[in-house]
Image (cartoon, rainbow, N blue to C red; front, side, top):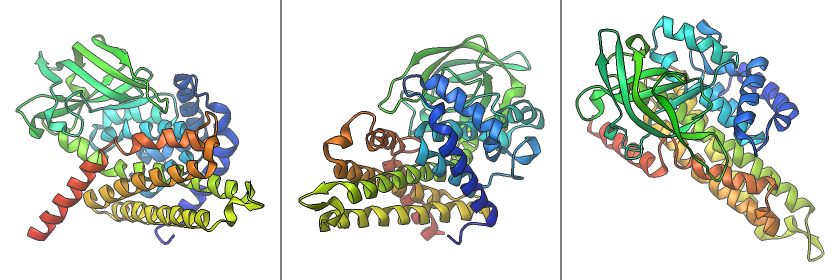
Length: 381
């Protein structure tokens, strides 16, 4: 597509070849913790994690290349949802540091993440503060002149239990979005414990974190006091498009699986693909895939051209691509028939993988609110 430069095409081709050759042997769905550690280390050794941090601290590009981030997630998701997850969290878990961290904080965390030596996590959600981030209650209060003490809990935290550091968003001031700050909390900090590991239909490392008088240096704050909401939203503004890209990779794999099944499955003296209903279904799937790709890479290209925010574009890309991938994968399962719900068949795995993408980093319903508000705001302006 015209949205790409030559280095994007080279990145996509080389990563695809590497992922097909290496990723399957690294993944064991019965031991996701070890699988994620292996994947992170392998991607670090191969240099792919350099896409997730700036060049000043071991990265590949001077600043976030959102098209490259999207291409990596799409390519990895096509091969393995867990590989995509492992890459994505390295970016999301250090995105606030890359965008707003001090030089000292960047130097401490980013190079190790780029090399795959350290696992990152992003701790924003709470039991009653998911979509409504401003409702968070986990708090940090001053402890002397150079530390704070954090108390509260975070839940649905990806890489919870295996991360080496967490970017934690806490309340430090008034109610609402203006009273939130962000801190980097090392996993071995006294007072931080894993309260619960969370099992989901597509196994990923997820946990609830508990903070009890967790003492953190003030130097670990990202941005200024009260800027946490801005830090979170700016980070999601970069990475929300990449969620759509991951869905696109899952959808592309489902389409390819369905095409192969249609071309080889014998039925009524012909192949399944000879039936017009099958052809119509494949047409719908392919159109959804291409429409998703255009929205995703329009959003990423706009950010890469210097747009300060891509709120509407990213929300459209994330919303459409995740919903479209759900339709595509569901139809692929239908093409496979009974085999499509058999454990160990790829489309069954894809069916479980896609569901969470319609929820995390802003559920579809939240994306619609974001798009609608932005349209009204633009019209009023």
